[in-house]
Amino acid sequence: MEIGTTIRTIRKRKKITISQMSEGTGLSKGFISNMENNNTSPSISTLETIANYLNIPLPYLLLKKDERMRVVRKGERTYSTHKCGDLKVENLTSKGGLRLMNVELAPGASTGEEPHAHEGEECHVVVKGTLLAQQGEDSVILEAGDSFSWNASVPHLVKNIGEEPAVVLIAVYSESALD
Image (cartoon, rainbow, N blue to C red; front, side, top):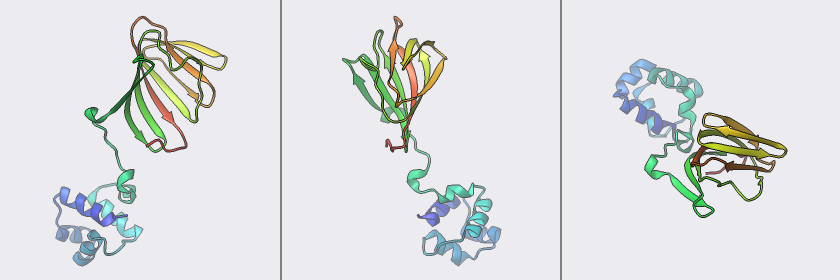
């Protein structure tokens, strides 16, 4: 973990000199320099002092780089199509076991010929169109603005029963990392 590098980046972004930080925290300039060069490991108490001085949450300093906010620009998203282009999946973002997708279903298109099951939990928001959602003995018609969720280990199916393309925002969580 390179906490020192993170502290230096934040300090410089806020245009704070080592001297100003030393004065504001009571830490020596030499200690701050060694810490920022990752030559010494500060205590939690020292990190708390630094976080308060920099006006940032202490837990942020403890995150590894790959644990911080992840941004996927619109032009960087991946897309996939299924069933002759009837089902278009736009992968919006993912983090650990959580994945967020925007799915467009052509009229009459569904997530499969038969209900399917997989590990995880799913939450859905119908953005556009009319969908039929089925799981086990449950069956419901949903329209734009409606939402539903289920345990994905029980066989399920989603079908566009409207005459226009339907769009559904889907969040899938699984204990297995999806990145």
